[in-house]
Image (cartoon, rainbow, N blue to C red; front, top):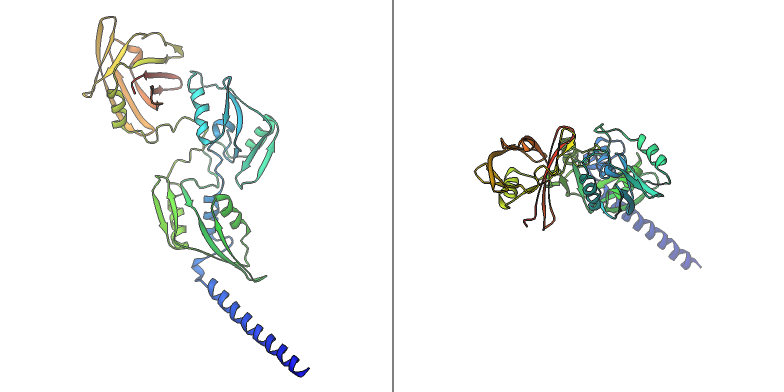
Length: 358
């Protein structure tokens, strides 16, 4: 019997020794300098949470709300055209339907019930348009500053180690989405010691990537980048169609295809779609253009200023006054068989050239 008791004591002492050794090793694993630990309510923690917050402005063409998105797929009717929006790419289908009309008043009907995803990724079922409008009223208005940071994004996966000093629970987490990272940050308390696994990568607003090696660098980077871009928190869904347009690209479109024709034309609230029917416009690389119709040819000039969404095409053909204007380039659109050049000015004047040249 004494022998059995002695064996049990040896086992208990050995187990305590092993447990102490393991705990020491575990504590060593999470012992990091204070500046490299993610703490509740710290500035860097708040910046990370805001960067991971759900951006609600991507589908403003559907809901006119910056603090939530409509969960896809969703069925809508845009100006009597039925569209199933399966992904963010399909927002362009709705925009294309709206662009075909001159009027700024467009009609969109949503097939309810739908689910909306709020800025904290919570999902809510909405049954009527009145309910949807009620949720939209809780969002900040157009271009009003909000909490989400859209000019910089995390690139996943990202990992972190966590130790809770209250319950002594140790865990390692790997995040693959903003939702997962946001939820994790939400749960951090003053009892948690969180160590991020560096390096991590961030994608900037110009689509370049940056490697981050410490929380100090992460805090400085997010602070520097958070206001460097236009977050596009307005309801003008087509004001960013030429983010990547360049003067050389526009010249290439204009001069690379012959015989452009006027597809739509509106001046001073009057439609002139047929005013230049049968007229062929040809843009030359030297900044001149010719217009031919019924064995008549006239000449004029054109020039381009600005870049991106701030590009202007200046047209001057003395004998064709309806075309003459400092036109703002709205969009260059091509599908492989046709190319459309959408030009606008003021509150309603519009000129669209079209070409079947590939």
